Image (cartoon, rainbow, N blue to C red; front, side, top):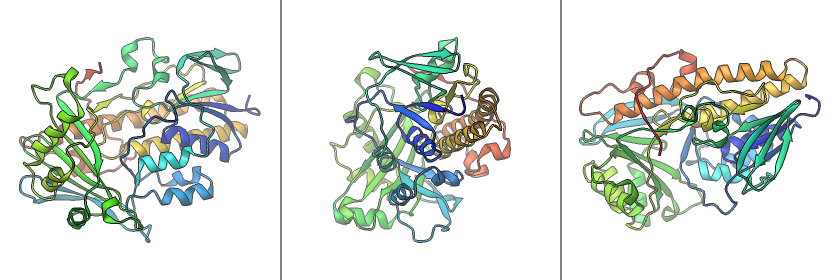
Length: 411
């Protein structure tokens, strides 16, 4: 089976597209599917790469050049030392700078677009079954399509359809909501004078403010390309707060979220208060919540089904780790497949080892990121933020053990 190796990829986000490019570079056959249509709007936000530094090895040289243009702020010096600055949102006092080393921050939307445009993605393919075969696996889609391969890799996000086929108990595969907190993640553009004024008050990487009223505010560059005028710059607002008692789920909407964000924004010092005052009333804000899926061993069907990216470890973004773990998954898969093809490993041993590693690495980070998420919303009662102690150090290098707080299942 190693000689005619083929991979089915479910999901065409950055993880799935990165895997496709990595396989193509190694001459390994693949087919990539997505339940969405090509016209589905792609949301945009910033992602940080600070320890999965080998990820560019996955892509062709020309793609690497283009990916570098997707950095939110262009740097001539790739060794520049970056940091995240934490502020007290009420006083403006700097709490601490968290060093990131020569980290890179990219536009998720632009990277995904660049990676997807050269791939043969098959859209409108909803996975409805996974069948084991004597020498591989079969994916069955809602339109009747059936595809066979050596292995199937689920890269279909936090609420992964692939994952649901790998557990006897439905609840073991479910994404869980972080209760009591709502998330607002969107970007804005401003008229020239305001854009310049706001940028002059920000760092080039990430500024975060924490407030005693339980709100958390990231004001972050999303696209400050050198060739764009100020009115075309993109600023990302990443703001979460306690869920208002009168916010009825069925009545939650973008318009309601705009009012909530502007209300909480007034309680912050500048430039955070300016950002919420200046963004347009008709801005779209998706009514979101944080959520997680803590990695646990899944039934890999005798070495035939793998999870990667958010499908394997859905975490809150409070330590900026998710993108790095996703890329590490892809690198590990490519390395394992190369060993199988070279006769240095077999399918079951490779997948057993992959699952054991990702369970250890992923579950630790899900716990720590969630613990950090609760802490930033309890600033009035506790100044104990994990990120102030361990920074963004990958936990699988530190072997930390963090208990997972209780959560509620997603509706």
